[in-house]
Each structure stands twice: as C-alpha cells, then as structure tokens.
Image 1: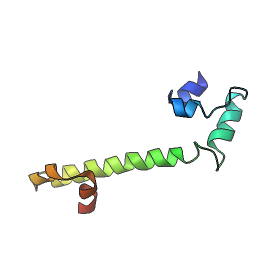
Image 2: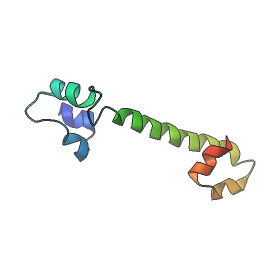
Image 3: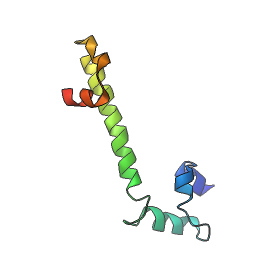
Image 4: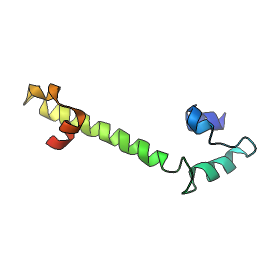
Length: 81
C-alpha cells in the first residue's frame, strides 16, 4: 500500500521498485540515489507544474488588456512576461 500511494499508481514508477526489497530500501535506492530513474522525476514534475502556473498567471494578467491572448500558444504566453 505504501508503494502504491507513494508512486501514485503510475505503472512506469511501480516497475522501478524491486519486489524483493522492502518499502524503505526501494525508496532509498530508487528515488534518493542520484543515478536512479525516479531521482530527477520530482524536479521534472515540479518544473512542469511551475510552468503551468506561469501560463495561468500571464494569461490572467494579459487577458483583460488584450483578448487576442486567447490565440497565443503556451510558449508565446511565457515570452510576454
């Protein structure tokens, strides 16, 4: 249960955990070791969420001034800042 809850049920993440190791050993080896698959995943997911927040913030700030912002791509929105 700890493994499923920690990894959010993601099949790719679940495959990274070794069934012969206990939960703590798996967390240490598969997420806290620099060369492990899941080590950089936290940073990657956080950056994705922050990028989404950047889109939303820019969109909300610019929309009242310029309704054409609806036609912009997400990357265009980030370049407005």
